Amino acid sequence: MNSNTDMAKSIDMLYEKAKKYTGTSAELFALNTVDKTADVLSSLTAIVLLVIVVAMFTLFVNVGLSLFIGSLLNAYYLGFFIVSAFYLVLALVLYAFKDKFIKMPVANLIIAKLLKSKNSDFNIPDILKETNHEHEEV
Image 1 (cartoon, rainbow, N blue to C red):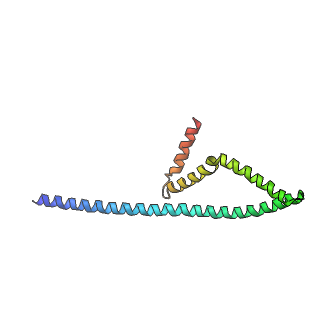
Image 2 (tube, one colour):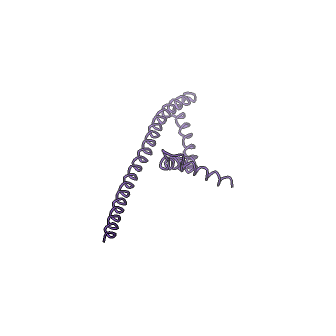
Image 3 (cartoon, one colour):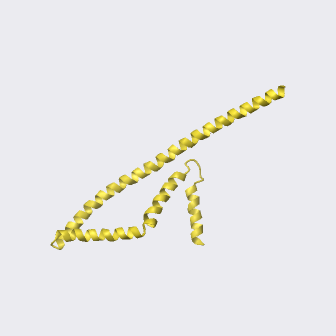
């Protein structure tokens, strides 16, 4: 009878420890998710703000360049057409190479942020880079 009681107590203790472990694991997962999400969103916010500032700078430089070219050609509208044509060609080139110049770098940035390990030397993005270099050499 005593061994059955001890076994029942052991099973109850095991169940309680498993329950606590599951709760702790779920809480840790939630905290890691919040940390990774905050890291990705803060990085993307910084990049978006930088893009907005660069876009404003570029806008004013382009207006000045258009006016300058227009004054050289004695027709301001021609300056704007020339600068617009340059951006049309640039847009076509970017569209043709969008996966290489836009999609892959953004995807790699997000993946690197999500998989980055803060507390260890084991960093998944570094391993992926090494693996990609090995495949490229073959």
